[in-house]
Length: 305
Image (cartoon, rainbow, N blue to C red; front, side):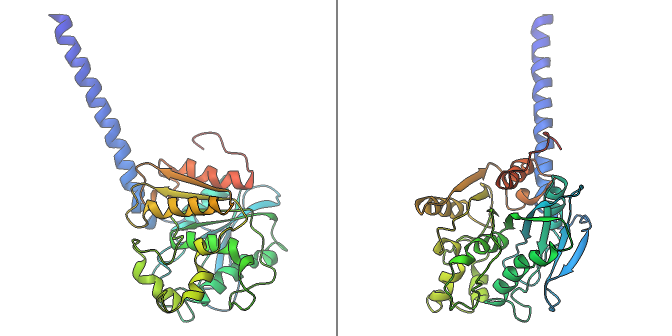
């Protein structure tokens, strides 16, 4: 009798423990989805203007030590719209800096700001990246080790930065000497401006000043999938539970990039949504962080750090 009554108790206890553990995991995942948008942001070391407009600035964070430090240009999302700014990416930036990477988190003119959209948004992104050459004169940065890390609409701009060298000379956003990148991490990025099915669909024509049917030439200059091959390694990171940017967009871009000869790595993270992948408190953060560190050949911190 004792044996028969003990086993069910053990089974029930284990089952309850498992349910409790799963509840904790789910709670953490839920808290880390949009919580990253509202948590207090770690302060940057320096806020630096790269132009005269109020939105032409960036936040610089520097690791401990003399350097020179590898650099990640961090670009926030928000469907390129004025109501969304760089603050929430301060968490990701601070975590990368703690791992040994200087971060330059940039703001830029967006749709709704004077001068935002095409070409102003792209001009600002490019100008902010190139401004690292000026910043490096007074701060210990290794400009031979620079990547771009962008989220959502910022993932689009990060990939676009790597493609600037491919733009025609008559483009309003052409630069004869863009800052070279060692790679790109696109976190749930918009990789194809012509593709429907994202939460940013209605914002694309606002960004580009018209529909693709009428503005085909500039869409080709702005859409990463049309600019392939980029010629630098890329990590295309996507949560398979993302309801803002479809997983298929990431998969199709990575496949197209590989066919064009790019070193494009697709990382689809199970049960991750749109914001877990930029939240250092999420359960998936270490995997995301390690992709950025790998592109810069920075040693991965011990697990849990």
